[in-house]
Amino acid sequence: MKDIALIGFMGCGKSSVGKLLVDRLPGYELIDLDDFIENVTCRSIPDIFREDGEKGFRDLEVAALDSIFMIDGDLGRKCILSLGGGTVTTASCRQMLRENATCIYLKASVDTLEKNLLESPGDRPMLRTGQPIRERIMELMEKRSGIYEECADITVILEGKTYGQVADEIAALCLDGVKD
Ligand code: S3P
Image (cartoon, rainbow, N blue to C red; front, side):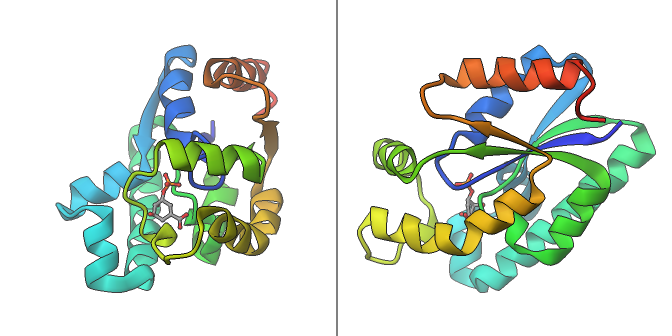
């Protein structure tokens, strides 16, 4: 049984949907990759970017996924993984995900991403460029949307749905066995 990986741009709701999904899928554990990295390194994501740069952070994502999938194999554990918005930009992460997870792309419009990120900006180093948020979303999405599409085993459109409805939709697909 493969893990379930939630992929998509910053602000699409991966962490929120993950928390709701884990209640709907018995036997799965939830791992938020950013939280995992922060716990293992005892540093915040912004500190890692500040001290090691984006490349340093991407290397930590690779190491984190590698150890999560290894532990899954050892323990026979099944996980729902809320990934970072840029995890799939690294080829070795994509390779590990192909082998170990069903990737669910939470697809949101630029309007929705902008609204969510303005409401809950968090501390996101990739957005700290001084550009207007919409411009930055469009710039990154131009590079990333093809990658999200390519990685996706399942795409869930978020428009007009609550996170609860999205979690219901994913749980129904998983419980139907579509993920296998
Ligand atoms: C990033 C997204 C963030 C976090 C890091 C880099 C990105 O996660 O992993 O700041 O490159 O898109 P969220 O998608 O949960 O904000």
